[in-house]
Length: 225
Image (cartoon, rainbow, N blue to C red; front, side):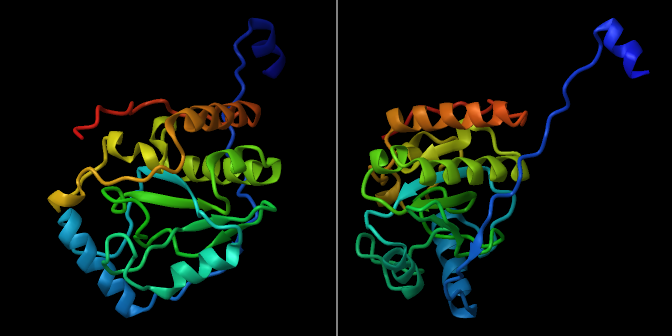
């Protein structure tokens, strides 16, 4: 049968699933009290009375603005009111990628993590140890790990390429929502659009090299801010 199909030119290369990259478990404390804080946060900001992350639709890339994994871990573990917005739960991310390319998972993917105003209800957060977009883009080990993790998460949850965003792009996400008016235009400067254009191009190149199908549905929207 294969010979017949080849002769007729009817064979196609089946889409593949990306391999799960090596991930080291390094959980931060996330007890019942912190889950309750998260549920109250989700209720105030999204109208959702839950701490559970269900059907994530967005992946947000960040950098830690620090130079060590331990400093990022300690910040996320503290569960202190954040210095900028002064609200609990404390900030966190699902993953932190160290400068040597080690991927650490801090929070289960079934749990809302507070990393991006307006998107925490539906977004997976990935932090990179570093102080600029350029520091990650110029580090082959860290970038390679980041792309592998992001592609694996995209495939696992059916997240399209335009919904892999930098923190600075949060206001143009079609999934952005914020009930608290003073925060509706709040975002951060990490992972600027130009750098994310390159990142998404590298991500698409990796997907093609591994024969992984990637959706391009869901273009960004205009920011109301």
